[in-house]
Length: 207
Image (cartoon, rainbow, N blue to C red; front, side, top):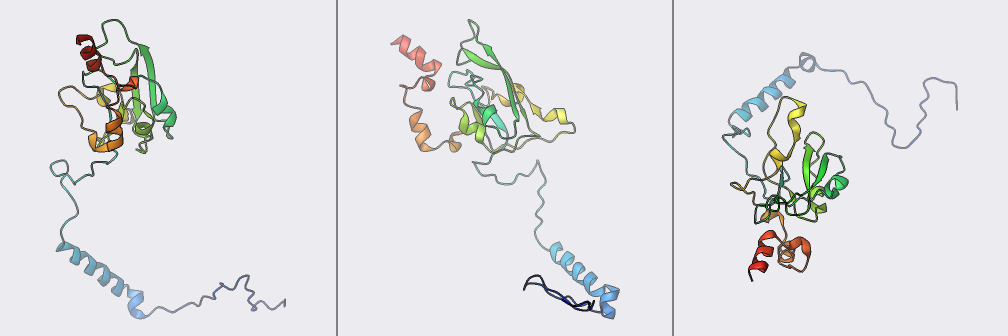
């Protein structure tokens, strides 16, 4: 090691000495850069626009797209969710909260099990749409659909309750494309209690 300030010491073999390159007159005027940018702009004028006029126009969306959540009903119209909390535990963003309640006499047509979710909320600002809630649910009560989340101007508008999550009887959401053939075949096995619907119980009583 010397005391000469002009000496260069390299710590690794990948070090590279940079030299200051003088700019030409054209480069100092930025004319080549401006011309290059304008040429790119003019080329895009004659290309097909990538913008769609939403919501009049919709882009094609894959059937397994993970979007707006839905709380499913069974064939008889009863809510499948039993407020077990597995979806909330599985959620890495802690976006799901719920309050359980016991089903009262006469509400068998509203709720499938003796326990149901009186309050079920998803914070869409927290949700990362990973689909773990869908995988954790033992009752096939929650699914992610191909629907988009509507925009809102306030944070409170992104707290989705049962009024926005539970499907209606008039407009059921088809989630068969998100279920594998193995799952659909397993649902036919009525030996398992969670595969038995109210409709099945009525058929058993009639026979």
